[in-house]
Length: 437
Image (cartoon, rainbow, N blue to C red):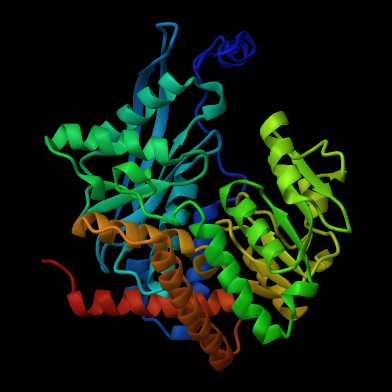
């Protein structure tokens, strides 16, 4: 894929070396630890266990060169963090984004630990990322970056150690390059080193839709508790990427009017409902949902405050905070994204009677089907898409019932309830295994 002159101009604009990442305006890992401490208080967790579980076990930062199409060399910074390996191999995606920081990666790794525990998977949490705008890279440059980053973190990953997966701006092709690079280093093919691969390399049926589908399974369960008829609801989805577009389509299949969707450039709104097939075609043609003829343009900030019954944040972190939480009109929020809601906003929404399905439960469909893919790779025995979806529904249904019961028992909102269940499980692993040596 050729790189246009405009893109080359953007990429080469700085005459000085690329600056280091700016300090976090909001420390996402501090938010993750704050949420952990709230749940630890409910559990009555002792100080020793709090110290162990509030730290990440392994943090690797790598600075590595990549040769570009024009023969020049650029330096990139990447991270891989393993939060806790007590339950088993660690698991977590790799994202390519210009705002990646080690604080973000640590927070996401911690949340992955709790997420896996909430739905009962035998994994600890991990996460990885490279600070890059992949839209400024050609396909060959993206491959060079992926292979070099994989080589840099190869000592940390493996099918029984740490299993990466796609995340923001990464996809099955990136996972194929990762798998091939790792396999070349060890000298034989290792399909279980990553999940989210193309089907031809051992990927799982149903994986591409898993996060959005699992989120809608969660919405179905919560709607029953709230007495919501999904066929009479209005849905807003922030983020029309893989998870968000699938969630929007499945909500529409339930009869819900999807009145607004957005991407990184902004959103569109039609109070009568959007033609999602036409919106998808418009985005494929123009690169954004904005400018769609059957709707009004809105900002991502405005979209969160639209009149709706179900709000699905499926974009990036820190979208719902103390400033906008009092003005959100949705009755049910299902977090398809990681970390979209601040602790202060959680309390405000809970006090207002808004039910929030937290990320560590609501978007666990992705890691659940990743687990299915890993199992299929180890056994070399593929499942059908129907089998995958049936097993995913069963896990999400059981997890919702358990989390809701915990919330009712302790009188807390569902994020704390999910954290209580996840943390209790990981704490038990830690107690039983003990401290080595």
